[in-house]
Length: 193
Image (cartoon, rainbow, N blue to C red):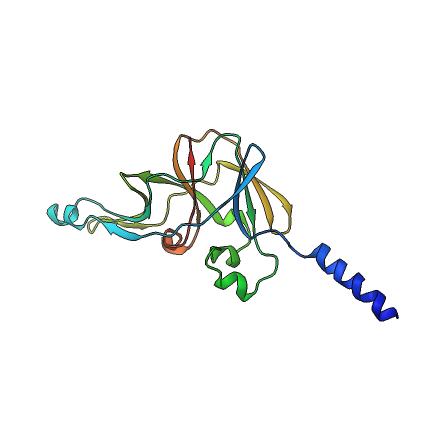
């Protein structure tokens, strides 16, 4: 009989202390929360001709390209972002196509920076390096960590709010990986209108 009483108690305590939130990044506008589906780059491009015509004097910029000239995730100065990281790791999170694999690697928004994307006619570009054979090579995504104030709600859940003015344009949360590798991982894009 004691075992029968302990079973529901064990189930209830497991439910109360387990994470039931969806893993990912969300945007909240006017108390409506929407998941930001991570997007992947479609190609990488660089202008080798410019460097060749100037015998390597001109910089050759390296960029990753993303579909669409604007994001479906619209933000403003009052928007709130939420980062939900897994508190327990398993193969379901790692192999899921809808979750950025970097969400599993390091569970903190401090491992992400905000990068500006350059909008083109039907794409957006993220610059992650430049090559110049006469001077230097620079690899890495230019990110800013100062736009957001981070508040930890509980283990695995963080609330981000703007703490300074951000210009209108296309942006993304980009995972900070060595040697600019974050530019090739899925990013969480948003547009400031």
